[in-house]
Amino acid sequence: MKQNEQTGMIYTAFSYFLWGILPIYWKWLNHVSADEILANRIFWSFWFMLLFLFFTKRWKAFTSYIKTSLTKKKQLLALLLASLLISANWFIYIWAVNTDQMVEASLGYYINPLVSVLLGVFILKESLSKAQIVSFILAAAGVLILTFSYGDFPWIAMGLAFSFGLYGLAKKMIKVDSAIGLTLETMTIAPLSLIYMGYLYADGTPSLFTVSWGTDLLLMGAGAATAIPLLFFSKGAQQIPLYMVGFLQYIAPTITLILGVMVYGETFSMTHLISFMFIWIALAVFTGSRIRFARKRRREAKLSA
Image 1 (cartoon, helix red, strand yellow):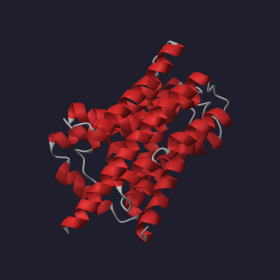
Image 2 (cartoon, rainbow, N blue to C red; image 1 turned 90 degrees about the vertical axis):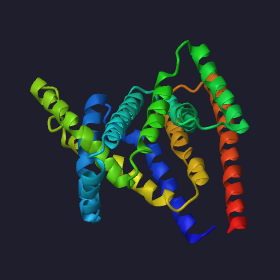
Image 3 (cartoon, helix red, strand yellow; image 1 turned 45 degrees about the vertical axis):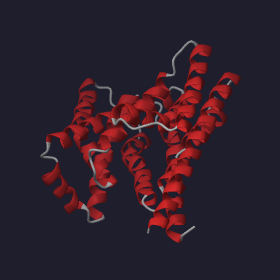
């Protein structure tokens, strides 16, 4: 493996590790409502990213993008849609973690790659390979087992998977550096966050600056906790093949699952195990097909060079 690929793999794996342990951070804030955590996460992420762009000398690129690209209606609509979808995804995840439903949250990020492909089929009219069809059948079986065994559809898992999958589609229309992209998304929704935080103060029910200095630091630090993994990911993913990114992404839900069961004592029954086994096999088939396809393309590229 080339040196740059090794470095890229380390950065990417570390970003997924940080995303995997992020529930610990939200658990420290479980005395704060999920909606207030979300409002602070968006608001402080925006200011953290502004500082980051300024100190990394990307401010000119940021302002230039606003002037040239955001005058187009499609770009503005895509940005608004992406901002709303990632906010919904963050809210569902924070709420799931702080209501002891990390196992189901991890399920959502396991099936997210399959949901993204499914959205590509229906929205972008992409075609499915035989391996992908098998993957969908296996994953659907796993979800149905959970649904019929417990009598409840896994709304948290599907909400996380579809909100992030649709977010990915919206991002395809906003072709910009990931750091600038996160700044734009949080900038779009930050005014609503500020209004909501103001409402909490008017209502006399805020946690920021009223509970403890530890709570204040955690709420303000949510911006850095959001941005830092993304920055590692953007640096690493540029240096490794896409199939390797797809393989490494399972680090995060695996850590979340382990934390939920081993650290926070969530239930993981035999039904859960059987359901997850179907989904893990589906992901193995899916990832294997992507790796074979990527290697085939690389061989063809070398032969034609």
